[in-house]
Amino acid sequence: MKQVLFAFWLGCLTATPAPAENQAEFPGRIEALRQADVANAVASIVTEIHFAPGQFVRQGDPLFTLDATDFQLQLDTERANVLRAEATLKSAAADFERLSQLKERGSATGVQVLKAEVARAFADAVRAETQAALKAAETDLERTVIRAPISGVIGIPQVRVGSYVKIGRGPLANIIALDRVRLSYEIPYVQRVDELDIEDMRFPLSLLDRVVLNIRITDGWMYSEQTRPDNVSATVDSATGNMTIWAELANPMGQLRPGMRVTVLPQIKPAPTGD
Image 1 (cartoon, rainbow, N blue to C red):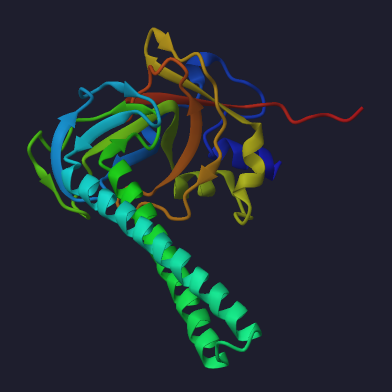
Image 2 (cartoon, one colour):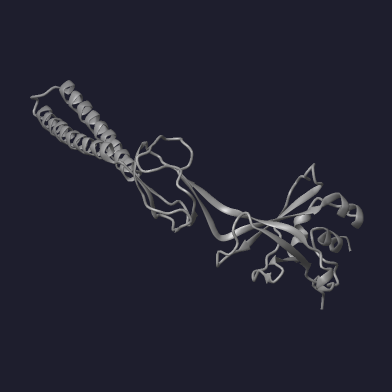
């Protein structure tokens, strides 16, 4: 019986469904479930903006292009450095091989061979270093095209063409995914606990699987998707005395947008009966 009462406290009806006009209801709001900031990893001048505010973008779509002149020059330099390092390594390896053969015939000393081996190892290390620098230069050049980190609706660009963007500045734009959103609503905590004489509050989530939430957008518009609450806040708002309850909500048509106010109509599913 305590479980049924606690489910009601979470925003449900009693175990026996009541008429629709007597159904408990709570004000709710739609929030973003997933969103991402668009940021730059290299500093340069914005040369192009590839989207309009409110546009749907897909993950990987180009959003901003930065001036790549300096990064292309750096890439060309690192490519030349790799070629130079590979040539040096090839020469050092040939010297080591030649001196090793001469040592076998008694025409070179062990010290000469050792020096040649050290020179070859050093040349190999330099080549590895230049290859790493080349990879970093390639990455920096790729980063001059800033792409969408997630799919969703993008907001207003926070820079203009011609702006110089530093690393670590605020986001260039924000993307909000709309395929799923978060629903939150509040219930009067102390009032419900007192009215329903609830004692054990340690594991409220174990009771949420029987609660079904319907969403009313306007008096004549019931949202087509149902959901279930999946989390409750650990604290009570000191100003209102309310506890917040959250639920994920499918939004395949993108009708629900963060910031919307809705009405939450919770119901409790009958407890399963044994055979």
